[in-house]
Image 1 (tube, one colour):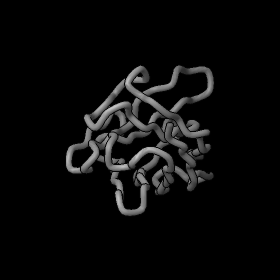
Image 2 (image 1 turned 60 degrees about the vertical axis):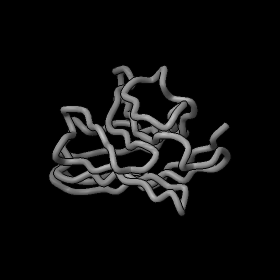
Image 3 (image 1 turned 180 degrees about the horizontal axis):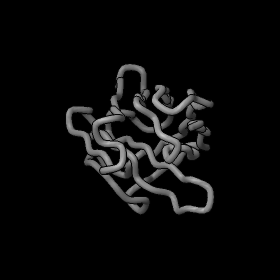
Image 4 (image 1 turned 135 degrees about the vertical axis):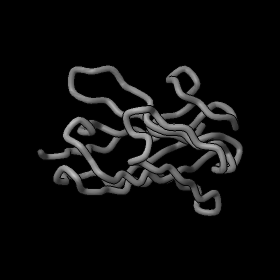
Length: 124
């Protein structure tokens, strides 16, 4: 089992930037992919980004591609989400996710563990 703790959420104006962090403990961090999902009020949780166990292979949703960057530091057992050019529609609770395996994931059933979530609010 993996324990995940997010930090870095907050309130930012449209066009601004935020960096989310997720600290992991439990299973060997380098043995599984990591990613981020988000859930806006009244909407289903959606995939945002994921990185393979090496961090060299990444994938993004179309809505954040070119604005968000996922990275991981296996030495620190941490994954990050740099969010630039934020829009009001990026407002959501962001969840850190640990995959069940080393390869990339884009859907909830492939997630083995979830963080508690951190709120990101973008004012327009």
